[in-house]
Amino acid sequence: MAIIEPSRRDIQHPQKTKSYSSSLRLWHWMNTIIISGSLITVLINSTITDDRATSDLMKSELQKSGANVTTEQARGVAHALSDSVWGIHIYFGYALTALLLFRLILEYFQLTDQKFMGKLKNAYQQYNIIKKNREIARHELTVKAIYALFYAVLTVMVVTGLFLAFEDALAAYKSIRPSVKEVHGFCMYLVLIFIVVHIAGIYLAERKDGKGLVSDMINGGSNKE
Image (cartoon, rainbow, N blue to C red; front, side, top):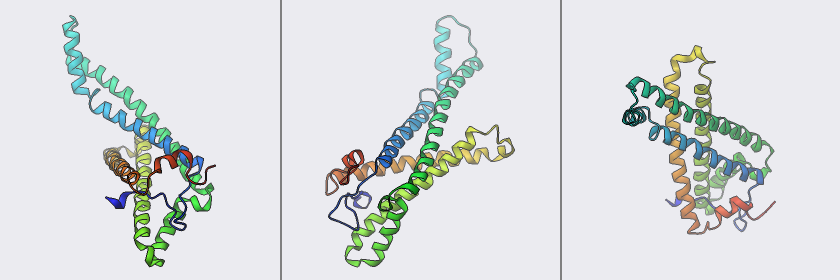
């Protein structure tokens, strides 16, 4: 489990803690909120507003009140309720798309020592060059590789989500909708796995040498802006 623990220390300057720009911290916490909201809408639609369960409940309660409601009518109302929740999910998807674009633009304007690709490349170089710090470099490289995979999954989820949101405009590609939907759903599970691994890593690090990671992502770390 230690391999998933993020490190506070700069791999090139172990005596210093990493610093995070205000823009990167904003993206991190906004991304946390948006992804959480998106996952919550999925949870609601798979439980509370599930078409079958909700329609049966509606029909039962309305019949108790003396209303004459058919199964088809109840399911129509339940489906409309489910659609309204999916509408919110789509808005969260738009926000996630904007955040992903923001992150890509931010990568270009970030200071050199704070660029993600630069850190990933540096971790790889440190692993190959400095044998005495190879264990530290391997740890940093693994963590960065997990983050890179997360960005890739997030990109696929955004692209497939936009396809589903604009499926009417992309009617010519309607035949691949089931496959796109399946990929989108699979990416959601991968994101859930990343969240669990990320939280577990932070928790373990906070109990060891990485204590203060959460605080750094709030106040910027050693080099506050």
